[in-house]
Amino acid sequence: MTFDLPTAAAARADWTSIFDAVAAEICAPDVPTQTAEALHEHVGPATDAADWTDAEMADAYEGLAASLPAGLAELESACRDRADVLRAAAEAEDERRAMDAEAFDVEAYADLGPVSPAMARAQAIAEDAAVVLDHMNAVGVRFDARRKVEEAEEFSFLAGGSTLAVPTKLERVTAFQGDLAKLADTLEAMGPAPSGTRYYPARLHKGTGEGGRPVVIVMAETTPGDAGSLRAVGFLQPKHVEWLAPVLGTARSGAVTECSTPIRVYATAVTGGTADRPTRGCNVAIAGAAAAVRKALDAEAAEARRETAYGSGSVASVEAATE
Image (cartoon, rainbow, N blue to C red; front, top):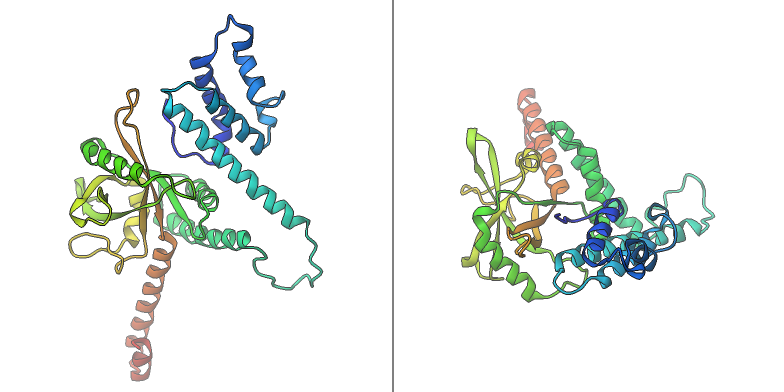
């Protein structure tokens, strides 16, 4: 069983499989106090799990994690990660309800704008999401773009962000196991981040793969601040390269630099490296995609204005379009 970065909905959907995995490790069916039923009653309310609130399910996941013996770190981490996500979702819902409970005596047509920092973040993320979704549809991606963008919205808000970030897993990581191990040591040495998830800056490099198709390699410094320790740790999945490549500006070398594109990528976790899951992987978050799309659209509009001006034969129009 593998455990990836969950959304709140996924964390709820994962309950049965993770509960069963924990029960298989610690329950003794012949001992009345150690059955799966007893464990269920111990960690959660005496109702069906589907009826639990996000806060109740977060408590239940914490209870599962506390019940596990030493040596099951991946399973414990899966429980605690889902508890954190559900706790954040519950807090966000509490904040939304509190805002809904407040009465605002204003004209119906008044433009209040965001009335809380959380609403401001949600609005900014939603605006980014609309831009990225339109771009994905224009490119013609072959996956459920709306679902992916909605998941990214939830991820971004729960992570405390104010712009859209798209979480994903790198692929073709087998060749980079040694450097992923070094990166894992680096992240562990840095300790836990205040937000719970560390966003370690990485870099992108655009190249050409089989059949002339673009590929994007993710690279990270295995020693923070040491450019000489920059190493490849995996490839972006083709489904993301498909929509990122058209707006991914690069230097001549193929390196994606800060001056060439607003897109940024961050390593959020190195997975695996355990006895039952020895192959390491890498989770990343792609930020700045909406800004990159807006930049590309602005460039297209400027080029269209220049073409129109040149076609008009008007010196004034050309000067205005090229200012």
